[in-house]
Image (tube, rainbow, N blue to C red; front, side, top):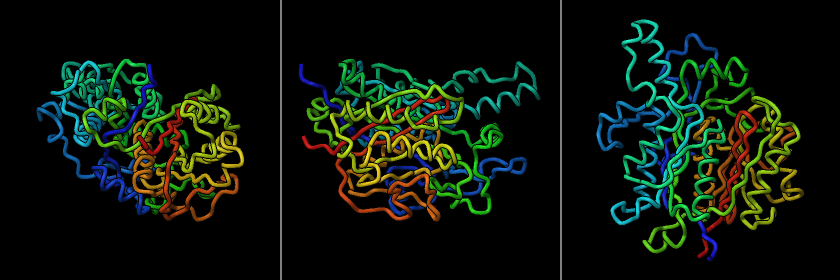
Length: 416
């Protein structure tokens, strides 16, 4: 049996930069910030008043029945919308496939936080009998994947992996693994998040993780910059359709790129801080390169996890140096899209893989904006402030989650 190759045939996303691929990609290429003062909740009680919000979003048109949109948490609405975009973009006709061969793995790091907050308030103010019977199914982190399968009639493997901010990469990577193993021919996979909420703000701020640069929202997320003071929360979804190559070719699908490698590891170090020596992420990167039969020197672009935290950006820099050796500082371009979108948590890896794929398509490396005083401990080519028009054949995306979860995904220009 010949090796099964996996390609990306459809893309769907919503982000603080726009509610589709075109506007999100345009924002990333042009170094535009999607971060501003929070509009969806009253920020008066909170020290952090900024985030990357999805704007002007209406879920109704993305569900087969509008009532199902109203019975879905905001994170689920994002996930369903991105999946519909990815499905449409892929050109897949669900009437012409074996539905048992197509699955869904669209996860969330936090899940239905807005539902939990709202229904807890109902319980406290109005009593137990007034809590919605939809509370649990709206809140749980797997429900987006379940609803997406129902919306499209996909009967194949359906599950989610929840690994905080590594969620998207783990779902994409494990879907890739199942296709390689022969258990499926295609997946909608990625992540969604909607945690710009009181508990989200309090929880992250009180652990001193969030930026409070409230007077300069667009300049607040500054990965690799010496003056960074924490990350900025973002929200949205990033979903891709991945398929086995011969299956995709047989139906005449357009192919964005080939997904060639995936690596995983643990830091086994701390609840929220990265291992300071960078060895965990370096191992994941090495595994992705090994799976992809790729030498470190072949990787031209790396989309870093780089959240704009003091410890995290330095630890990732060390990991990149461990994994790539001399190439880390001589030829490898590294940037953080979180400088523009904020940290989209469980959705981050989906959007960041899309940035890699579109970079390969268009020959563009997106910038790290707000680099005004680069940290000498982050001494990489971080593509400061302005995108570069250069051909890209191989790119890698890193995602790391609280709990020490590391995941790297490798993509390559499709060449038949």
